[in-house]
Length: 452
Image (cartoon, rainbow, N blue to C red; front, side, top):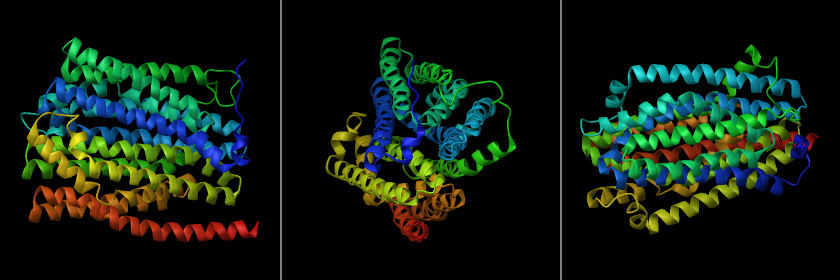
């Protein structure tokens, strides 16, 4: 008999223990996923060539857009489920699960169909050239064919984590990563399928992980499971899911716009290899960002549950501890990338020009990286307590209000250096804004705590 984990422990267990229990599996999963992306780029760089790395980087905006729609459902629904479980509303939590399945089916199919129809024009707009369009096209076609599987896999993993099974969510990701890393060299080097083999390995590995998740939610003893009557779309659930998920959706959608501007700026002032350099820098920096996102994923169900249960002291304690850990992660990432950039970059390519461009970009973009840890947690805090509008505003301060103008103006005066410098400048200013809004909300929560 499978033992069902009770969500009530989130409101009683020691915060430090809880955060480790929920965050460590998520961190391992996110780090493993990011390491796969790094390994993927390494295989492509050495097995296909430097221009293939540039072609892969051209697909980043489309991947961000796909992630935007995935997070709209996955993050929104997982937060909603955390709050409903905190209120002991198991019937509504199951209805959210059913709506996640239906929404992912609809959105996943429509996104893939539209993108496949307009794939080449989109990739050219994203910064592809005649030298890189073939690589980008071959990769994205296969990814889009499997897009419905990807959406369902990511959505159910978010539900797994928020419903009290962080280790199973980690296992699902690890299964995908391990299989992916096994198939990648086989398909690229063994079968000679090139960049197509890398994309196919991704789809196959996510399919296997999705089967693992489906088996979990078919358990008749689980308090959250597939059952009759939960698949009808309900206005209040869809509305609540989209309202909460709108923040990460806009973050990823804006990331799509940002990467387009970065790619086009680097292409205009530096050429295909400059885009490849950004692809390498993006993979490296995202390893540490994904670790912090994993920490946030562990924080989210704890804060969401305790906020729903009006245990404000536990909300504050969880947030404070998460910020400390995130800043520590960011500091480690900063030191590694500033002290050993050449060692890291050479793992991806032997092309000296690409190595030099990547080292410069890595050092510039991460120059104020330590403060990013605070900003990521503070923005996610508002999402976790259901203040979606505030989270959206804070997310947009960096991506739209500050970064877009910098990416448009600075390259006109400083070329590719202006493109690279735009990112840390936007981070610095938006973190100041985030700190002001965050500490005001903390004061409000402290007053609520004192009244209790």
